[in-house]
Structures are given as C-alpha cells and as structure tokens.
Amino acid sequence: MAAGVLQFTKMHGIGNDYVYVNLFEEKVADPRSLAIAVSDRHFGVGSDGLILIMPSKTSDVRMRMFNPDGSESEMCGNGVRCLAKYAYDHGICRSRRMRVETGAGEKSITLILRGGRVIGARVDMGVPDLHRAAIPMKGRPDELAINIPLRVLWKKLAATCVSMGNPHCIIFTRNVDAVPLETLAAVIETLPIFPKRVNVTFAQVLNRSEIKVRTWERGTGPTLACGTGTCASVVAAAVTRRTGRRVEAHVPGGILMIDWTSSGRVMMTGPAVEVFTGEWMR
Image (tube, rainbow, N blue to C red; front, top):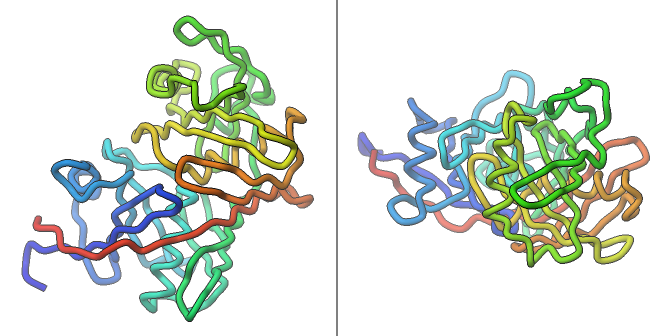
C-alpha cells in the first residue's frame, strides 16, 4: 500500500457505526486525532468513533475505542460484536468462541454464523456494578446508586446508575420519544456528580419483557444504539422491579436481546454488519 494511505473498514451494530483499523497490518501514530477526523460526518468517513483491532498478549484480539471528540472509552457493546466479526471473517481468529481484551476487561463472545460468515454475536458483558464508587459517582462509595434524585435544568429526575465497565445513568420516562435528549442528556453527562462524565439513557418500559431506550453517549452525543447503555438499562429496570431480567430492548437502530442471568452476568445478543472498506489519505 502506498505511503500515506490507511486501510479502514466501516461497520455497524444496529446503527451504532464505527471506523475500524486493523493494526495487525496498519499503523496509527495518533488515534485521538484520527478518531476526530474520520468520525466527522461531513468531512470524514462518518461514524460514532474509531475502533482499533490490535494484537493481545492475553486474549485472541484487543480492542481500543475512541469517541468522535478524541476521548478514549473503556468499552463498546455494539463495537465489540463488530470487532469479533471482523476478526473471524478476516482470519485473525477463526474460533466461534472468541476472547477480546478491552479497557473494561476481557469479554467472551460467541459468534452467530450464516454461510460461513458472522451475522451477529452473543457477548458476555460481565457483572454490573451499581455502587457509586464503580461508576464513579460522588457520594458514599458503598451506596447503591438506585433512584438517586437529580436536578437538571427545570426538571427533577430520578436516576439509577450502573457501571458496565463504563459509566451509565438511566432515567425512566413514560414516553422516551418525547424526551429532549440533546437538551437534558448533554447537561447530565457533565454534572459534577460524575467526575469522569457519564453516558445517559432514557428508558421507557413497554411491558415486563420489553423496553425502549434512547442514549446519549459520552463524548459522542445521540447514537442509534448503545450496547453497554442498553445492558445498563435492563439492569436498572430489573433492580427497580419494572421488568424481569430477560428483556427485548428496542433502540432507534433495531433490537438487542439482554439477559441478566442468574449467575449475575449480563449477556447481550445482536447483529454485526460490515458496510464497506476504504482508504484514508493521511
């Protein structure tokens, strides 16, 4: 490949789209600057961020994920499914059971295949943590962050906060489509109570086994789907007795199946799609 040209692949998990770069073959000196450039939907490729596919000393493959503002996030649920698809389809790891190193620890993934190619995956997202210290959230470190009152602009809200390896603030509402997400969530993300900022999801319970959610991702803004945010929403719904522990979650980009198992681990199942490949002129 000619000097100054970077190969990339565009992928999405129910509309949560990322630019992927295979560091088994490419080099990226400044991932933060690259994330800002490629994520721009007018002057770049257009995405919810940049994901680097990397060698790992402990797992089959490693993932690093950068938001459109250049900040690095610990984990991306939709992104890790697509990374696993890329690793399998492109021969990095040819096992249907794959281990991916992330900033939130190792994730075990079971691939769903059709015609020899990956169409989706079931991801072990780990054990959620609702303690303030884990999120992190100011206050008593050992207190569970369930139904915590927040005052945001003109509204009084009740938030249940969950760490899925990254921080989430879940707020239940009767009509999620009527929520002014860009107004409220942008303020909640940077409230002083969240020293590392927070992802914000508004959730509507449809019945005991279905919810509808919209998410504002830290460092990104509104997205069509957020895997970790959807998992956190199901955990929050279950601990507040709004739903059971196995839930079909409707997001703007599609549907995720979330199962908070009796072992305490959250399992997420959803699709993974490769859109196109291209060359980025550095």
